[in-house]
Structure formats: C-alpha cells, structure tokens
Image (cartoon, rainbow, N blue to C red):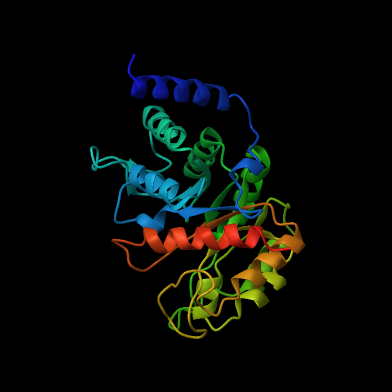
Length: 288
C-alpha cells in the first residue's frame, strides 16, 4: 500500500466514524497560536487549488484552514470542485491531504443554499470534516439554519461584506443589524466578523467587535491602512485596524472560534505577507 493510499484509507475510516455522530468539534489548543485558532481562509489562495491552499497554509505556519465553496480541488484534478457536493472519496482525499500537512479544517464559507435539502448537505459536509462552524450571509433563512445548528451542533456565522451604496437591502455590513438578528437565537448562531470590510464601510473595527460581544463565532481578519475607503490589505500591525486591540477584546470576551486570515491582495504571491501575519500572533502570544 502506498503512502497516499494509506492516508486515504485512514481518512475514509475517520469519515465513516464521523457520520455516526451529530456533534461538531471544538477547536483544540494544539492548533492555536498566541492563544487563538489563527489560520487561513482558502480564499486568500483562490488563484490556486484547495490542495495548494492547504499546503500554503502549512507553509505560513498556521494549523487551521477555512474552506470556501467552488475552489478547484487540485492541480491534477482542476475539473473537480471542492464544496459541499463533494463525494465521500473526494472528502477523504482532502482529509488525507490535511493530515499530511498538519492542518485542521475548522470552517466553511461564505456559503449559501437554495433550500433545506441543500443546507443539509452543507451541514453533513461540515460534520464529516469535523467543522466548528459554517459561514453565510443568508439571514433570510435563519429559522432553518438555527434548526440545523441545533441538530448538528455546528455553529453558524453571519458574515459581512462592505456596505453597498446602491443596495439598501444589503444590511449585514452593519454589526448592529447582525446583532439584531442573532441576539435572541440559539448561542450557536452568531457573527463572522470581518474588520476589514467594516473599515471599508466606515466602521472602526474595535467598535464592531465590542458591539457583538458574546455573539462572535469566527473572524475574517484583515488590517487596512485607512477607514472609510476600499484599500488593499497590509500585514497585521501595519494598518489602522488595531489588531492587538481586537485580540485583547476577543480574549476578554472568551472568544473560542477560529480567526481566518483573508488576505485580498498580492493574489499570486501573498504567502510571505500571510506568514508575517502568523508571526504577529506568535509575537502576541509572548506579550504579558
């Protein structure tokens, strides 16, 4: 048996076991850096395949990844898309690749689904991968999502993109709106805070984090050089997002979710900057 076949056999065995339970994984301490489960949103590497995103995440020094739907699976199989429609064979291949590189899948999104049947596929996919949460902007389906979050014990995080000047119906850019739709829901329903998109919308990131106290499931972390403008990402600590202040506040809140670096610049060669962002967390972990 080759090493590849062994990895796939082990992953298929784990997959079979995982489908017999209905509980999501917590994020273990051994994948955390500086006290946080900091890793990469695969969208950072969207010019590459899901396999390459795992490899680059490992090279950055991170140990967790958040996948997004529709990324090509690998250089060898560019016609196969990695998402919640994946076969058990493909899921096992990804699990084997994750194990090979010492990376844990913790989240998936931003994802949407047309009906309950497809959302069930999303949550089954999450259960097979042992995900902590799924990320979406589908606030119009929260009744259904809350039911599935309880059934599968997988958290749901409402994500924000920037404010849309010509679309008054797009409201999740505003953390106050997100809070209004999640605050009376099951504790597994909360926010995926994106401080970079808040900054573009004119919101001071720390204000958003404080407003959503106790309801933050995950974070898509960015640092930006300005507030109120669409600007390129910069390494953590080089912008105005006050990343240390955000982490201090999250720690004070008892935040237990994942933080995904979503670096949306230098698309073809952003690994050095991502590694620098991971280094920021290593430094943060040494602070008294």
